[in-house]
Each structure stands twice: as C-alpha cells, then as structure tokens.
Length: 199
Ligand code: 5GP
Image: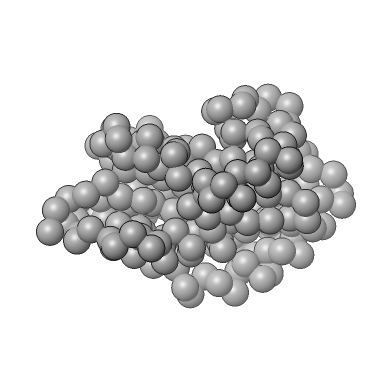
C-alpha cells in the first residue's frame, strides 16, 4: 500500500456552504490540494472565468464530449444544465502530484467514489435546514426566484443521500465546520491505500 494522490469530494445542496469550505482547504499548503475544474454547459455568470471557475463548453460541445466518453462522471444537474468532470482534468492534476478536490453534486460525488473507492473521500455538507438554505440563496443574489425554487426543491432529495457519504459535516458554525473539514481531509490524504482497479 502507498500514499497515493487522492480524490476529495465535497457535495451538498446548492447554498450549503461547500464552496466556502473547499476554498478554505485550498489555502492549506500541507494538504497539497488542487481544485478540479468542472465542465459546464451553462453560460458564465458575471465575474466567472472560463478555465478557472468552469470550462464553459456550451450544450452542443458538452454533448459531443459525452459521446466521446471524455467524462469520468457527468450529470444533468438542473434541467438542460449539464456539469461534469473531464478525465483529462483529473489526469492533469494527478500528474502534478496533487490531491484533487471537487465541488460537485451528490450524484457525481458518489459516482467518483464508485470509480475510485480506495482513493476517494466523500464529504456531505449539510445546511442547518432547508429554510436556511433558501435564505442563503436569496442573499447570494446570483439566481432568479425561479432558479432558487428549483434549487430548493432539489435540496430535499439531495439531503436524503447524506448517509451514503463517508463523512457528514453540518455547517451551522462555519469555523467549526472548517476545522473539522481540515482534520478529516488531513487524515485521509496521509492514509496508505491500495490502488483502485480502473472501472
Ligand atoms: P452552479 O451552477 O451553482 O455553479 O453549480 C450547480 C451545481 O452543479 C452545484 O450543485 C455543483 O455542485 C454541481 N456541479 C459542478 N460541477 C460539477 C461536476 O463536475 N459534476 C457534477 N455531477 N456536478 C457538478
């Protein structure tokens, strides 16, 4: 068994605070993490940068890449909105000797665990409540009321998948959640694991 590069997956309903936790962990040099930039079919939002926040492929190109089997996992996360992890992205970061950290939806997260059961740690970030989630999304002001309603509706289904994750972090108190996330990830990346059979 060796200390192989790992996959650290953060999944949660939109607005639960997973992005904040992921950004926090990326500041910790001892974790040797690099962020997996996902591909998305949607347009970039104000302030988002192609190749930094996402690879914004557009729907046509995204579907071509599905056909070409270029994805490790992909999902139609919302109607007509596709997101996915490109194989070449993980290869790129593992090639740099990095542990790869993901901010992806629950289905995609569990799919990566299936593919790399030994090397992957899945973390579910739980918002205090669905009501609180709605308040956070409204405050964020990045989505229309309709899109917020869509995300809140999806959150209930996503919450039900929490027991399938390796670790659940309840995000009531941000500094506690940050400390727990750091400890959990630190332990896992130093763990010796056997290599996964490619699936
Ligand atoms: P947003 O549009 O707010 O940036 O992201 C919408 C949702 O897509 C979030 O729940 C996010 O976790 C998910 N997502 C982002 N990248 C990926 C990915 O590569 N794969 C999957 N399955 N979901 C993703």
